[in-house]
Amino acid sequence: MVRPPAVAGIFYPDSKEQLSQLLKPWLVESRPRGPRPVMLVAPHAGIIYSGQVAGSAYQQLIGQRYRRVMILGVSHQANLPYAVVDDHIVWETPLGPVATDKKLVNLILVNQLIRKEGQPHLDEHSLEMQLIFLQQVLGSSFTICPILLGQINLTTGRFIGQKLATALDQDTLLVISSDLAHYPPAEVAVKTDNQVIEAFIQGIAESFLDRVRQVEEAGYPGLVTAACGAKAMAVGLMAGKIIGPLTYQLQAYAHSGQVAGDQSRVVGYAAITGYKK
Image (cartoon, rainbow, N blue to C red; front, side, top):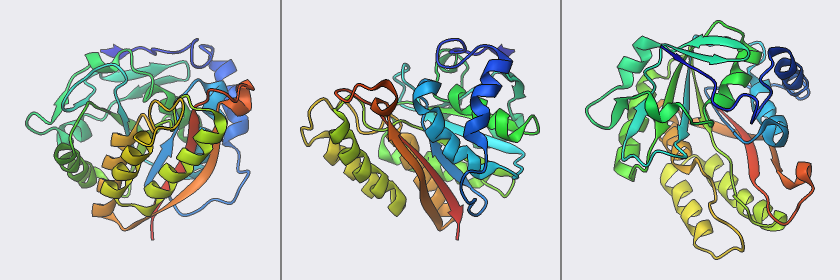
């Protein structure tokens, strides 16, 4: 059972050659590499808008090898009170097939909080946008465990974070998919995104979620959400605290207005890596 690409030809080129050529300039060692990442946060917008920022996170994987990658995001469509792990055997992109890791999938399944379902993954773009970068930089020598969060509460988030932590061994990478501020003017996005990034880098999930809520309730013009993947980012911090302590480093920041030219309504993007001290 194959999960076909949902946004090839829409969010990124559907030609293998065109996609690979587009990704290559963003995946060169243009800055010093840090320690081996355990976790990274990258955006998932259309590739012309957020690809360069995402590439700044994935540059840190150059020369590294991982056997497994857990890709974690928040569903943009399914309003579920739990997490869903994809049950497709293979994910397909223009760069080729990648197998899901059955052992890892079964390891993190538990009661009704983390379920195995394929349907919520079929039209979701946030994990697929990470997979094409992973394929370009890691090749074909890894398997994936795609995980989507629904509208979970903090208690459920802690439990999921604990389960992910049990799977984060030295051969496993956690990728968190999230954009930041949605649709405020550029100057507002920069201000709110700085607050959200700073809170994430501190590494405390509860404080991070508090800051996200404060930003969203502050009445900034045009702001719809401070981070569409905030719950995934928080779960990542919870897992990181268990296996850590982790140090988090901002690799790049930008917003869509810097590409599109429209500064009146933008989306923010950040690339962050997490590694053991």
